[in-house]
Image (cartoon, rainbow, N blue to C red):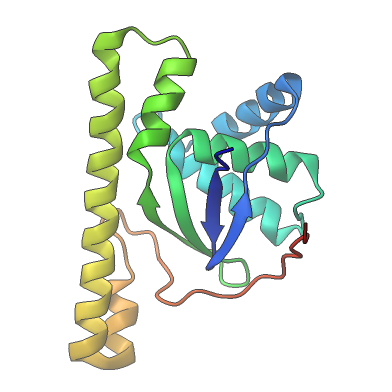
Length: 171
């Protein structure tokens, strides 16, 4: 059996299916956090996950599990959240998850390429941000790394992962 995971601050969290009505309610919460209609929904989903983490939500919280599933459905595979300083950085997107979501949402076949292309573009952007952070940290020290953490649209991004407490269940 294939299990989906999403990595937050270096911790792999298992994505589990939740009730459809709960997913619908949480998708409305994600929509409320979309600051610009042209902005990708993945950023709004990541922001909502970060907000829930800041509130102390964990794997037992159904809202958090639904938000985790929505983020994974939007193709997010890894993100770094620093709740204390309110910084967020998406590290990577999963092209296969984006394609599967397009299929299961009933999109026409001609839209599948658009879903994969979206994930590829977002991956390129995340890789460019990571490259810029590492290059600036190497050449400019901490002050340079903080300057590089400013994203292309003026948002700040954290350069190091911060451990948040998650309990793993053993099987």
